[in-house]
Image 1 (cartoon, rainbow, N blue to C red):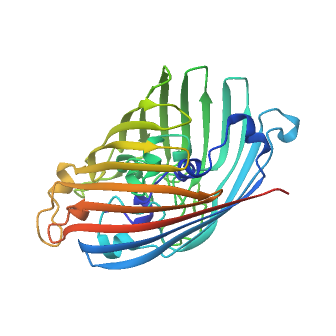
Image 2 (cartoon, rainbow, N blue to C red):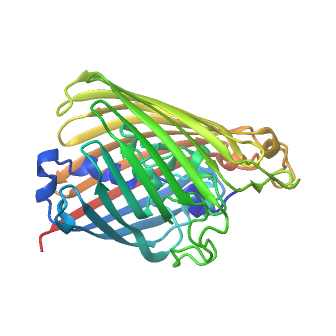
Length: 383
């Protein structure tokens, strides 16, 4: 099983968009400095590894330039410094592999993203630096409401790599090029295969750049009318990865697909939305061979409600490996129900409940019942 940092991948920016969405015309007027705090009071009430409570916290201080950097229209840069504390809930209490809180990670202070983006035409842009891969690839826009990490980036992808791919909480140097004509987008990215150093969580740069090869990822996203969007992606590592059965190395690669739809309502008002995502990875090198997740949300201008499921299924090599001397369960499934209320500008609370079947695929754990309350604060500061 990979470490907590690998399993905690989640698209954080999507969650912020639910708190304070801004129309495209207003983006250039947004104050350049933002301070964001997310705190999860999260409890394992029954089952799992051990009952107990954590106060998991994430603080970000981010600076964004205007959209005319170096006198170039559309050019801009961003930098984000992140403080993490209180992590370890899933490892110590619920015992689940998919990670019940998407801000659960080891304590650290370090740069999270530092990148420069340049336009090459009206339809082509490129980005380079320390980049959260999940801010460009495998984005579950509807699923961003939920707390479980699998609803931000699928575990079929987030489990991969020597120390996880370039996602929360440790990013890696990389570059991305996007082609965005009206109605669809094609992206391709190249990232260092090793994100930071798992043994030294304050480090954010690989000890030896490129020594483990690269992660290559591509994705196509298509908007079908005003109601439906589909996307498909594929990824792979240039260097072989250790096999789970201990027999040398093998290929680490996979793919995913997703559909999101607005069933009823307006884009900017009351709306019922649905999404379904599936993905797969090489079972010779990765534990999760098949993943399926999705759910429903109902949103208004200041509230959101949702229910979702995340089903992570072991491949044969991982399934044949005993856990505490006993054959593993084949799948871990999390069912989550949540509600989010925006109390004021930049302030939201979110009660949440998750029922996790076969946490960590460990047959010695009972199903876990997890309760959480999230506090989300955002402050925008003009300079």
